[in-house]
Image (cartoon, rainbow, N blue to C red; front, side, top):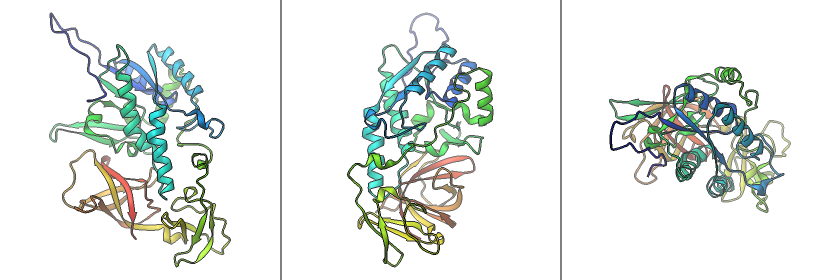
Amino acid sequence: MSPLYRPRSGTKGKKKKMKKRVVVGMSGGVDSSVTAVLLKEEGYNVSGVFMKIWDERYKGLLSGPSCFSPEYKDIEDAKKVAELLGIKLYIIDIAKEYSDIVLSYFKEEYLRGRTPNPCVVCNRFLKFGFLLEKLRCVEGHFFDFFATGHYANVEYDKEKDRYILKKGIDKNKEQSYFLFLLTQKHLSNVLFPLGRYKKSDVKGIAKRYKLPVSEKAESQDFIRGSRVHFFPDRAETGEIVDKNGNIIGRHKGIFYYTIGQRRGMGIAKGSPLYVIDIDERNNRIVAGEKKDVYKREFLVEKTNWVSIEEIAEPLKADVKVRYKHTEGCATIYPPDDKSKCVKVIFDSPQWAITPGQAAVFYKGDILLGGGFVKTVYR
C-alpha cells in the first residue's frame, strides 16, 4: 500500500474542486523551508513534517550540524517557518526505525570493511517509507504529494509510460545521486521544486520571504565527530601490509579506514601511502601508492533501475561512484545468472572505487539506475 493517501471525492452533488494537498519534509533548514514557500506560491495546500531521528544515547558524543545530531534547534526553526507560512507542522518520531535500519546498516558496513552511504538508505526506507506511513496514520491528515528539498527533477514520459528521475540544474548542488533507490511509485507522488533552481536563487527566496533560517549553515555530513562512538569495544587492531603482504604497520580497527585514505595509518615512509584494500576476513589494511588507488572494473549489487527497465545488453553510460565524483564514461553489462550483479568497466581508471558506496548510472541528465559497489577487480 502506498504511504501517500489520496483524499476521497464526494459521491453526491457537484464536486468541489480542491487544492492538491502536499506535505513537505521540513528539516529546519533553508532548502526545505523554501520548498514549502514555492509550493504555497503555486497554490498547493501545504503542510510540513519533521522527521525526528536523534537518539539520546549519543548525546555529548556527536556534534552538529549534521544529518544525525541533536535536533532541538532544527525543530524550533521548522516551527518558526511553519508559523510564518501559516501551515501545519507534524513532528513524527521514527528514531527507533532509524536506529534499526540506518544506524545498524552504517555499523555493519564499516565492520565488514565497506564504506556505507547512509543518506541513500535513509531516503529510500525512512524518508520515503516509514515517515510517510506514520504520517498517514495521523488522524484527519491526507495528502496527494510528498515534497522534499532535494535538488533533482522528475518528469513523466508519456511514450514510455514511466517517470524519469533527472539531475537538478545546479551542477554544484545536484542531489539525484542520493535518490537512486526510489521506485516508480515514489516518483509518481513526489515533488522536487528546487530541481529547477540554483542554490543562490534559493537563498534569495529565503531572504525575500524573511525566513528565520535564511542565514542558517547547511548540514551535509552524516555525522560530525568520530564514528568510533558507534563501535564501543569493537576496535580490533590488526596488520597493515603492502601489496606483497609484507607487514609495515598496525591499524586501529578496520572501521577507521576507507579506500583512498592517506592519513591515519601512522607509517613513516619516503612516499605517501594510501589505503588500497580492506581485508575484513584477515583483519588487514592493504596500503599502496597513489597509482594503486585507481581502478576500472567492479561489480555492482542490489541494482535498482529507476528511469529505464533492467538492461538486457551492454549499455554505455556515465557512472558516478560517490557523490563528489565526476562521472566517468563506462560500459555496464547485464547481470549474470549466478551473482545477479552488473559489471561496470570504466573507459579509464577512476579514483577510489569503494565497496559499499553507491554507483549511479546516468545518460546525460537522466538517472538510469544504480546499486552498491560489491567487488573491485582492477
